[in-house]
Amino acid sequence: METYVCAFRGRRDSYQAPLALAEGEMLDQFITDAYALPRLKALTRFAPATIQTKLGSRSEPGIPPERVHCLWATTLLEHVRHWLGFAPMLTYMKLDGRFSEAAARRAAKQRCDLFLYSPYAWEAFTAKYPHTPRRVLFQYHPHPELERRILRDDAARYPGIGESFGAAPDQVPPEELFRRERDCWRCADLILCASEFTRRSLLEAGCDARLCRVVPYGIDLPEAAAGKPPADAFHAVFVGSGGQRKGLHHLLRAWQMASLPASSRLTLVCRVLDEGIKRMLAEVPRIELRRGVPHAELQRLYATSSLFVMPSLVEGFGQVYLEALAYGCPVLGTLNTCLPDIGGEADGVFLVSPGNVEELAAKLRTLAGALPGNSGVREAARRSAARFTWPAFREGVRGALRR
Image (cartoon, rainbow, N blue to C red; front, top):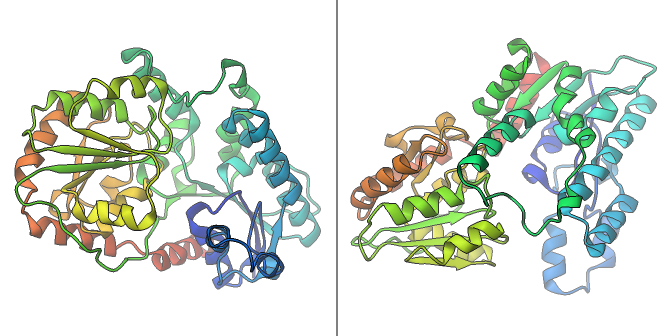
């Protein structure tokens, strides 16, 4: 049976890809950064509850701990660079290659195959081996060239807006670092994408359609949260980074343009805000900005909001859409996301063209009149989320590998 080494930093996709491999007895090794291995859990059992909770999220019981390898030195270097003030994106792109190199060493030693996420594939896919490994790429984000073109065109229309988040100009990653993710698909024997939009971005770059398959993400359907939205007012919520890619500047302009009822309210849940968008906020009425929101409060916001809205310019999937739908909250987004794969308006999924502020304002006006008090659309929204489960995602991954 084929076995794979899988590598990425963080708890991306809640570890569902390596879990899919482990469940199918196809996981040779999972290489990551900080992971709650049993010995680490034992050492921190008397740590504060917040640390234990965070540590608990960095593990997956279905992945055998003996198959996990942590790059602790890389993790330490990453935190040192953050402390010294380097831009996080520059740090990540500089260090991502270490995960790929570790995967290459493991694959060569064990003569196994490669299942790598796009930022961590280049070095392993282009390495020399004593065998011929199967190179499987998980392209979780649209092709970088398409993203850069979309954001560049939007920036020309809206000067002063960009995902700066305080980064200095001299900390922009050099072009050779972008090349790693831009070209790694060329070396892949099989490519999995989480959305049709991501797949189309690769086909546009020249990828063979026969090698590129869609396996949508999933969600663990939660219990219904307490509370419900007001029947006589329109309350919308946005959850995400406050930058250009998420289309927050379009939402602010559309909210101002839509002439919504005075009782309407927009809540923004953003840990970071682009400087240009931050300046826009002062000019837009009936908006509440919340920087830090506990998970229970986020659940309540989904349950008590008429609409979740995130008009992203480019999104590999957009897990937050499924999260909102799972709590019965209808969603509004663009065609450049997972939403066309999830459903239509009968499912509580509403779409606009990316970057079209006038269309977005018109849709907000329509939904402000149609959603309050509409329990049927909320029931449909929850049903649409229930069709996309993590077990189905994992079986989809294994099925694609077996073909």
